[in-house]
Image (cartoon, rainbow, N blue to C red; front, side, top):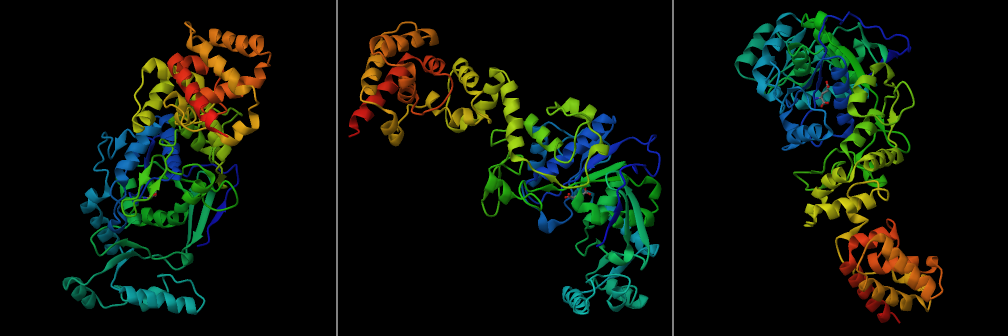
Length: 530
Ligand code: GLU
């Protein structure tokens, strides 16, 4: 479909004054799988806009397509919004509001009357075509170089209430023949509407399909249910992804045909989120390839059992994810880079949402998380670390864990890395990097480590300060070596790895028993190397 937009930056006029209308926006996902981060961004922008305008933020579950329903997807959506911290004040799973139910399958009985109203007023019609007949029509049109649409021209050669006699139509309806209800679009008309982000959008009806509004299974399609519910729920602004822009002209026609033009919401279609490298929409494969999640939470596919990783389970903080998403397609009025949610509520504006796609920036995502990790105190980090530790079956004293967090926070970008990069705080090292040892160890190294171990074993004050002075005593005074010649060996013998937080702090926190034991097992291993 050809869509013309006149996105002149200065045309940001609204069609009708909305001053008197309460801002009510909705996030309306379909429970067809895990919520993609693009969906979470849509929810976030709706939330920010609603809060800023003193309006309502609604969660509506659009599950009219029973064939695409995936168990667990609705719960996933609700849990994701809760984790990010952008709970709707009205809607499925959150209570509140007087416009429920908020799950479309439970509103089933409400839609038929509007489809009937459209048929009665001549804006929709019954169509009885079989799947084969529809395929045949599309093939013929394609073979003749035309677009395969069910439209003002092609509908005249199909089986519908515009071509069949009224007796025949009645006979079929009475006999219970399967049928759908389609919108009847005019042949040549311009559909115009204003999009807050894109400016004026103009589409010709000759490029539009007579879309199905009501299906033979007694369910409305997305288009009818979406428009009816936005109307009944008094939605003032539809803020959604760009992939819905081609549907908007049809929705505009529905508002007109149902006599609801005065209540039509304003539209804002958000830009696509693009791959970090190259063009095209961001996909799960890009995330797998470049090492970042495209879902908020882990998700296990109920059919294939395939696991997709999510931000929460990959060790991201919700605050960081909010910043990552806020900046995908929007920018603040100055060059600040970190915003708390309440600050975003104040600063957000649809005027600063861009029309062009937003490239996902992986390094920036890591950076945001690192900033939040560093800004948190040890107790908060410990709270965030606990779920990761309990997955590993690790239980430790809280004071110890807080100190581990304090030492590790400058070294990692993700909360789970406090465990994965600092395993020696929880387990005795069992293997060492042999090639590193062969490269760095001199003939005196093991002997000095032995001496150091003995000295540490008899140390009564195991503070970082006294460990440091013992180290200098043994290395410099007793053996005449430079500290730099023994640092790596000392670290490796205690922790099993070559890098980490300041060494004397680390050894002190591990405690005398563990440090000495680790050094012993390292020296046994070392003596076994030939
Ligand atoms: N159910 C649609 C979706 O899955 C909603 C689109 C809209 O917001 O109108 O995204």
